[in-house]
Image (tube, rainbow, N blue to C red):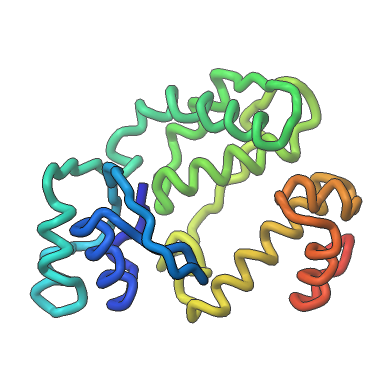
Length: 214
């Protein structure tokens, strides 16, 4: 699954087209081609036809990807889906965090259905995960879900506006801080959660100026 396909740059577009046409790729730093047999699902909120006409997206890649098109309305136009999405995101969050399951009250669902969701499904996922992380008991009520009011959103995440190198660093910082918070500052456990060795985590924290307790 390739999310935000409309945001990739020319170099990545060329490489992706090669993978789709030749069914092979090379790992980062590798020299040996690896055969692949995959099916690709790509998503974007951008007008790719317009991007093609403006020479911002490769036409050959567009037609290679555009075999079957599904247009999904924004969440604000299908609020009834929140009944299904919230339990799914709650279950995913508890499993990812390794914590006991929690329930969501009907009153909480009703509150979420009155919101306009400018950040779409991704915003709903983030709101649910935040509620799960901060949950005080086994049931989530309306007050557990923090919704921003009256703030115009230019993009779903400010990280999208950063240069690539800065965005990568910011993403690493978020992941490390989250792991440290969940493991109460224990670097060994945080490293295990991140799937890296503890010395690598310490080095990353030093390079990114991350301090325990932030």
